[in-house]
Image 1 (cartoon, rainbow over the protein chains, first blue to last red):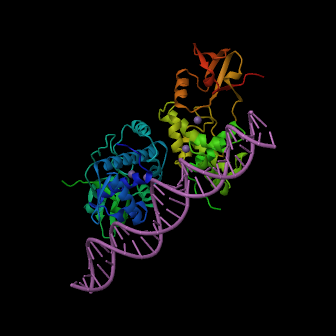
Image 2: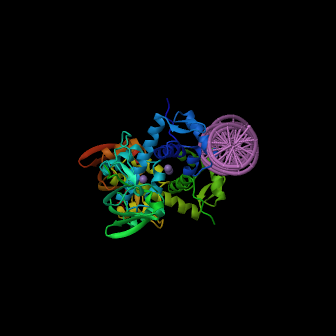
Image 3: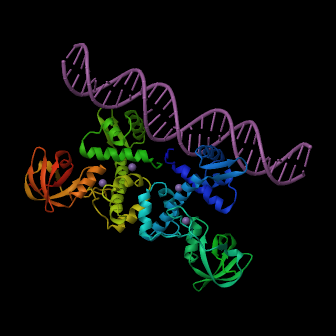
Length: 222
Length: 222
DNA sequence: ATTATTATTTAGTCATGACTAATATAATTA
DNA sequence: TAATTATATTAGTCATGACTAAATAATAAT
Ligand SMILES: [Mn+2]
Ligand SMILES: [Mn+2]
Ligand SMILES: [Mn+2]
Ligand SMILES: [Mn+2]
């Protein structure tokens, strides 16, 4: 059995399949095309190749799935990505909205040595700056607090943000200015039609639904 | 005028032309093929393209030369490379023989932001761990002490190593064990046919000619 | 059930950047 | 000068990973 090192494209395909699978339970060719910013025929072609390599399985019109080995690779890339994001933020003074782009390129290029070095340096963190879990060196996903989208919560005094489900630069820098970042404690004043009224560090905002939906919080319900 | 971002290959070609030009005064297609680990026809093809982009000039059978813009790009990549080498060594605990390989890949992928961040962090260093000068942000080559190969020197008490002209992992780790690294002060005992007899930190070695030739030292002659 | 819509695949192109085999050109040597 | 050797170029191939246009299959609407 050879191990002919995957291309950056192939790694991105696997990673994206994994991430989509976390949200929807079926991953269509179109989903992939959208996410990877590629045309559907390109996806068909690449998926065919990944199938032949036993990295994914594909039931036409039903969806794509990672195999064991495919998932391992996806997790490896995801670990690189999220470690890098945290590293860039912590050690190279990157702002929240800049880390994703850089990590997207570096993730394919750093060695296992590099991965280990920054993991060490940061004391083996479990979550990246967006609150996304960082797969361990053994490629297990670390436990995260159970999270729910902000709009699904009722008014409450103390809610803790756990994760921010976007990598859109504009939204991210907005959220950052508002202190709506993982770990932040907020008060949910009222869930209105137009958005969620919250208090953060004294200030009060109406967070539009489109944005509120991306903010996941620790579930305080019993 | 567009700026269509060069491929990694193209960047490596330009960088290699620059480096070869520092040694020999003419850069042949074969030199390039050897250094880039590629067949001569591939070089012909790529050089043709780089010519069309006005990044190099080529007189068949006479040699290849960088244009102004070509040199700028070469220096940009070289700066990335050397900053990265120093960064990996200083901040990520890479050993001397590991840095080159990693930098060779990362150099094409880091952003200007990344470059600036690590340069800042290291206080804008002028030389990398091999003693190679790091082009400045303005792409000027910083002054280096004038250096000569170790075998060209006569016996002397205090000679300072300035640069080590190899990136061969085996040679590098050997030199490192012997403390034959840039900045190190050594005593040249005798220049023999078989090699150079030196004393370094108390210990005495016979450094074979093949290796001694790679060690450049500050010129103590007047 | 038929039709319209959406999702996916086929077929055929293109650009990149390598390769081999064969040819041509220049530099050396006899 | 002529033959030899080293260097470089052409011609033609291949793998990758995208693309468009057209065909086909599944799903939804009438
Ligand atoms: Mn990527
Ligand atoms: Mn993230
Ligand atoms: Mn390189
Ligand atoms: Mn170096």
